[in-house]
Amino acid sequence: MAKRKIKKIDLHKFVSKTAQKGTIPGTIEYIGKERAENVTIEVIEYDESTFTKVTKAKTVSELPGYLEHPGIKWIQVTGVHNSEILQEIGQQFNIISLDLEDIANTTQRPRIEERENYILLVFKILQLNPENQEVTIEQVSLILGTNFVISFHETTPNDFETLKSRILSSKGRIRKMKSDYLAFAIIDIIIDHYFTLIEGIGDNIEEIEEQLIAGPGQEVQEAIYKTKRRLGYVKKTIWPAREVLNQVYNSDHQLLNDETRMYFRNNYDHTIQIIETLESLRDLTSGMMDLYLSTVSNKMNEIMKVLTIFSAIFIPLTFFAGVYGMNFKYLPELEMRYGYFIFWGIMIIITAFMLLFFRRKKWL
Image (tube, rainbow, N blue to C red; front, side, top):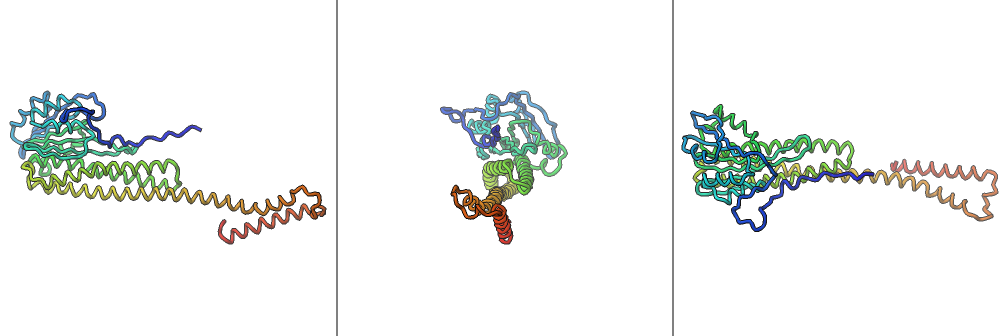
């Protein structure tokens, strides 16, 4: 029988990595999935009354020119695998090398760094693949400046198209607010993805629960275990995000306005709600694992009960068969004319009596 291959759990995506040994602190080294795409830079300019369509910057040197224009600038950098481009951006916006190193490390935990002229925010987008229930993770780093926000994405940021549409249509208050509100709006979309992820995992747990009730099997056990592990990884990612939002809310940095702080507080409250839900789902999966083990144990007990009953029935029969199977020359009953039929009659009576006894005891 061929050995069944069990798919490995996606632990590596949630384990932080560091640069090679001996590397000087502040060395910009890309750490993440190997990519060959070209780095693209898009700029969106807007204020309360006007909106400039998305324009693509051909070189990094063009970016400071946009800062001279009035209004808020949202600079989207797609691709952090090119260390040279990150170095150029750092030079143009006075971003220190330690922060650029964190941006290039896509396994970085969510964090905040407050500098004199900007704030670095690192978050993770988590999404659930509905087909294989795998959790995909992507890092989004933000540089919040006076009149601009630079967002660094690993892949094309399609998840933020709704935010672009809001800016274009001037829906909500985003066109009236400063750059810190733009940073909040980006983070708010990331938090919304957490809710979608939790909802998907909850639906998956319900499906596993139905399979468990229908009949436990090796696949059900594997699904429960992997779901429990993933919940732990997701919590490991979202927990520091809560700390970051709490620091933003309590920060007295000049780039954060009092009017915007309450929105970051709202995001903080959402992360608490998400973590509490994660705890509930994790407890639920633990209960499902206990139920699985209990069900398997009960099935084993049922099997052992049947085998025990059969053994109990055959014990006296085996005794009689053993007695009259002995090789003694003189056994009184051997000379009886109807001894064979009497023997079988006794066997049947004993079997019927024991079955009736087990039934009255409700063991059958």
